[in-house]
Each structure stands twice: as structure tokens, then as C-alpha cells.
Length: 177
Image (cartoon, rainbow, N blue to C red):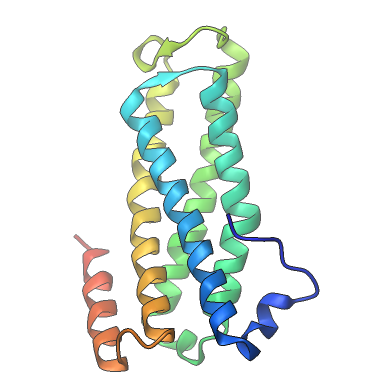
């Protein structure tokens, strides 16, 4: 898990490039864990108080910690104004909106059902919409993870600017399929 930063350490990390790259990779790892946890919840197809707590925690951690740091990370890029980046920021905003809708559905399920027992999704009417929201959120998070990973490769010199642009266009094109 990425450590807590104080006094805008994140913005001054460029002075120590190795520390900066290490931190950003930790952040990417956190992001991958969020995607994996949501994927496992979808696969399990059950709902319990543990599922509620886990999903609520994931959404809070992503929206209050991971997403703001990603915005700071992308905000340092002089290419931020180019065509591609605003669309990826739109994905992030859409995920935040879907998180809000998902939290509403989770709260409603918690209020209407005894979730101390494990319930199969089909037994709860609004859990169909919870599962649907999760299935919409997951590909968007995965897409954004690809962008973030590619950006790290570009910054640490693993790929050059031509390869970066080519791969960004490939990722961008997958958004419309």
C-alpha cells in the first residue's frame, strides 16, 4: 500500500526520481488490487455484510485516496491538454458517479435484507443492479489502469515518446468498442 504523503511530498518527489517512480508503482499496485477485489466480488456472486464493508471500503479508498493521487500524477504532465487525456479523466469521473450509485444500492440492500447471512445475488432484487454496476465499473477501472501503467513506463524511460503515443492511441481506440 502506498504510504501517506504530507506537505505536498508527492509534488516534490521529482527531486528524487527513484523515490517518485517507486511511489507511483506502489500506487499502481493499489489500483490493481482494487480491480482484483471487485473482480473477485463479481465472481463470488454472493452478498453479505463482509461484501458490503469490503465494497464500501474499496470505493472510499479509491475515491478519496487513489483517484486524487492519480489526478496529481497526470496533472504534472505537460501533455494533459492533448486530446486523449481529458477522455481518460472522464472515465474517472464516470467511475466516481457509478461508485455513488453503487453505494446507494448497497445501502438499500443492507437496509432491506438480513445480510448477516450470505445471500446469493439472485435472492435480492436490487443486487442485480449492484452486480450490473460492478460489471460496468470494472472495465473502466481496468482501462484506466492500462493508461496509468503506460504513463509510468514512459516516465521511467522504459518506452520512448513514439511508443507511448502509439500505445495510448491503441488504448484510446479500445474505449469505443
